[in-house]
Length: 157
Image (tube, rainbow, N blue to C red; front, top):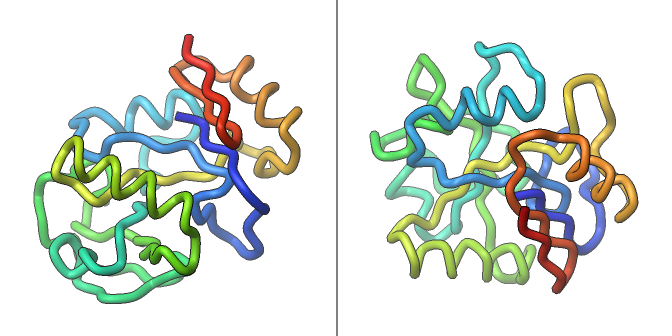
């Protein structure tokens, strides 16, 4: 899912406003996202997790800016688990990003997982989408993105 919502992030990571998101339980998820983003296969992916559930999935309690690597403690999320069993999670609170937290909450209600694979909304060598037009262009160019959400509007291939 290409997710474009709210203001753009400041800093080196996608924090749930300009992101490509995916179910982290998909066993070949890394290969799927690498094919979409045209990235090298060894590069890891981050995860977004509800902050109040982070200790159930990662050896970290709080990491709102996705700056820390930590060990994954639940083997049910292979798409975000690097070869050394690490991940760089982004812990999300309702105060920090209410819409994105609501998405994580709804995903948890549907699947039992408060975690999503989260990578920046761009292709290799390109900047993260900064405008709606860039998000739409990325959605039209990138093979393998099934759905795009911009604010309250959804496009499904």
